[in-house]
Picture 1 (cartoon, rainbow, N blue to C red):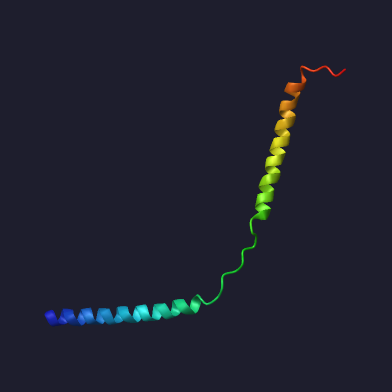
Picture 2: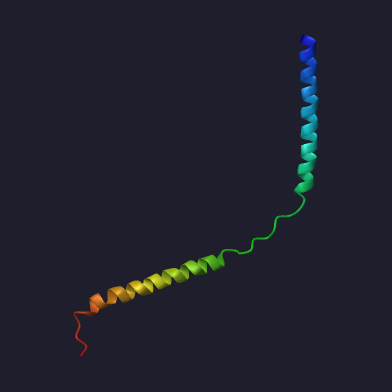
Length: 75
């Protein structure tokens, strides 16, 4: 029984070695292509957020302004 388990462990070690050897060679073959360049560097997103914030500030200004101007008499 002890000899059978030694053969099994040796075979398992041999197959594990082959698996590591071949998986490493496949990984190197697939990783040779460079990654694609990013489509956007983020400036368009930043400008969109800035535009939305400016519109929110404009709307809030026009909503708050009539409350301040109601005490003044222009005419």
